[in-house]
Image (cartoon, rainbow, N blue to C red):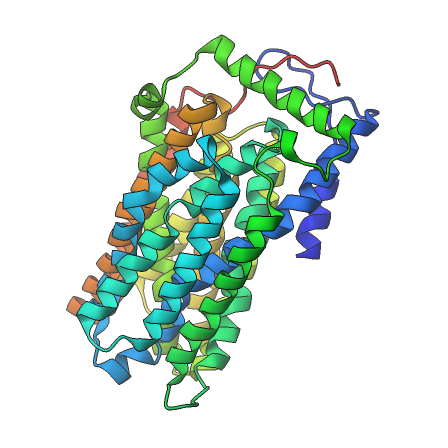
Length: 460
């Protein structure tokens, strides 16, 4: 985490842009107030929201590790596990868009507190399921409990970070995805070996990984600040700077075109972004969920050793995400930084679909595929706020993530599980993902919004 924060500190230093019309001008390099404000906001908010998302991703995806042991105890096959993994997304859909608007119009601090406490309780309850229907019900409730967290944080970050810092901020927050797998998978693997009090390892995994959500849900109530004007931890000059910069950005977008909430979700580019993220998210969920099982069957290694292998693709994904987010901000370019990672993932999955390559070559290819799917995220999530603001941006963000997490998050794992149960191989499902990712990679190049906004700059 310290590495991430230091990276963001350095990359958040102001830069000078010369193109007047399209790029959001950063404060002058000599502006000490701007430098101090950006650094203080980064250090205050990013490590904490990153930690919250690590906990969220552990609780959302610890089923992938539990699936190494749970099916034998409960008699579940791949189809049951895949459907249960996907049904999380259906619960997620219900509160996704309302939750995002609540963050914008009411309170991120209160809503995120509610989310974390409820998902912690449901995660603990997962330890006591016995039947497929109980399994489906608890996964559905987990999705319902967590709905709104991710897009809510995305909207929340736009309350604090100016446009030129936004892809780096997104990369810092979403670093939680690979870190949760890289750190969480070995921890979860160790917990599978715990057998105490009549409970199996997979049950202790759910119980012990649900407790941090309860604890930090309470902490969030006291720690997060909804808006810069409420931030007593910012000195007055820094507080005024960030308020003024964000207000200029908002006015600049409205001077081009002010969208209502309903116009935003019908906007051509919002529809393209929704389709694009649907394909990426479905592919990412499928790969993330089934990767431990695929490596287990390829290698025949112990559960713990498999969880160590799972860490490697996610570590590479973490690096790719930070570099792509940094370079996207540095060049003020979003579309190619979004398209190219998807094509890289498609190429790796294409090779995987052609033959059974063995453990080490397959792990290498999985790592490339994971890196592309994760590198996509920072530049992608910087795009909606380039042309939308206020409730319209919140609605668009919620809609994009709702469809992606709902349909994509359900169909991805379920499709791969269905194909694996039908063909006794994962290779046929890789071929489907390849076609989808190649087409999706072309979509950002059709966007009319290039990822820049117009704003005045006085360096104040």
